[in-house]
Length: 114
Length: 115
Image 1: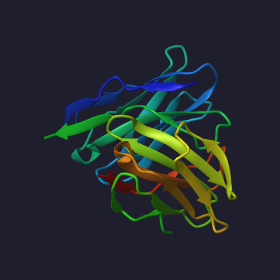
Image 2: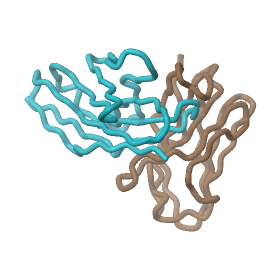
Image 3: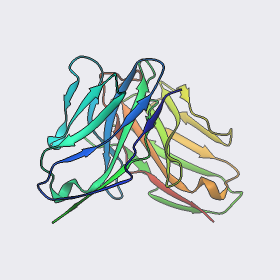
């Protein structure tokens, strides 16, 4: 079975500073990787996903993530954060051909401060 | 285009009761998935439906069930409610399952409180 680890439960950062949210996964077979964002009292919104090809994936709102197969990581980065980026971020995996059955990490609360 | 609509938004039930939650996918989407979100367990997959057929199921007891109608709307039912069933239940839809190149759209969820 696959699993996802988000080591940082909370990440505080000042506005306009860079940020990296870490995600590691475990799976014995090929997976697809996703990052979702959840704003208060809302559902999840897809930021970006890695299916195949280029290991650097660019998403919405200026976020990007890099797939590293040898380190089984899929860290999310943004060079300059804004107050509006304050939210909870979830990393997720699905098996190739596994439909919409996603396994999520426990989430990282990003808090952007002035 | 309207997003994924979940009703009701909030629900309060007592132990032992049953509850039905509703999800209307985005128009044209035929795949609907359900997730449970709790502070302790995080987001966990419940089940996925496509064309009225359950295609995937998570590790939840049989008290949790679902169905999908011909118009792609979906309902999930939880019988004999327990305190631990208190959670945010999220519904997500996509054009098709095995959604490698498709995007999952989530609703805002139904917040269920069991007293």
